[in-house]
Length: 409
Image 1: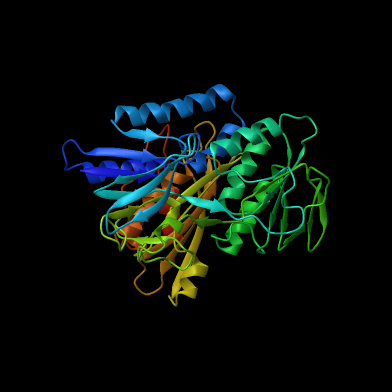
Image 2 (image 1 turned 90 degrees about the horizontal axis):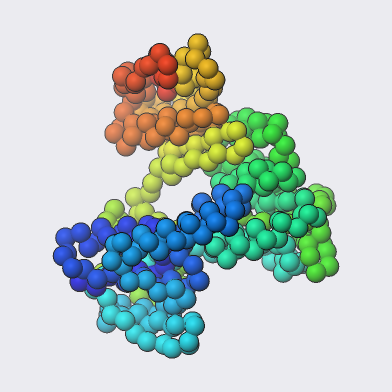
């Protein structure tokens, strides 16, 4: 069996390995349009604060990983068409211009997404950038080395924007986040977002919420960001306002797409087109997902899973919520970390529907536990009665998850 992967993200390679598990001697080929193997978009901001050696090691590790799995990988090879009926792809070698065809038994689409950039005056100025590829990262690392790049504006107050903001905070830059919605982290309930915003403001992040960019004044380089409410100094603007799934290759195949353009997949990663699978930002699960995710900005770790209270009410569910704070270890131990959790549950059945949490450390572990509870259909009482680990030196006798369950009325 021959499997072709379009794009080199880790999820694509994992999907191919899963498809090939029952086929001895399966041949896997990767076609990557870029000049570097993908190191994961979410991890790129981390390397803004690291030296080039660390980045080189990450790139080399990816190449080593592919070689170790016996995968044939081609950089600067763009897949330009898919013939689903004939099970073949048209590929262009961008280095030589040679165009050729390659046949597959199974095809994995791992093309990711493209950043949206506001189409306003000045959006083409140097210093209005996105961070999606290794090439973008290398440019930003060189750009911020110049001493005059002090004022950083991040467009977008969602996960991606905060990921980028944390790196510039570590570099000692002035960080301002502009978000068109009236709250930071629109994926959270408003009162939770306000508490998180307050903690980030205390660490030096400036916020301008409910503002939309109108232009990027400057000459060759961007010098300011102008919104509907004001004008702010800007030496570098990183845009993180959302993405568009890269599914153009599926045009004409009959693949079912979600409203945002992502290709719909099942639990087995299969699209509606026989022998074509998809993973990553270009795909969306037909049955939805819990959207479990986490982020650390400065000294604050943030995580969520399942439905927010706002989302549940919009879906017509009758819900209740509880909020409580606990610590990850006994108070007698050095440096106990406070963790606050908001738990959302169905009012009648008391089934757990979602949670949002934040604190200095060990927040994600609590959200992981709640994600399992949601999938298992557990009630608030059942989750609160779980026998979590207790240790006099590392774990509180009452875990923050148990405390918030106890607060649920």
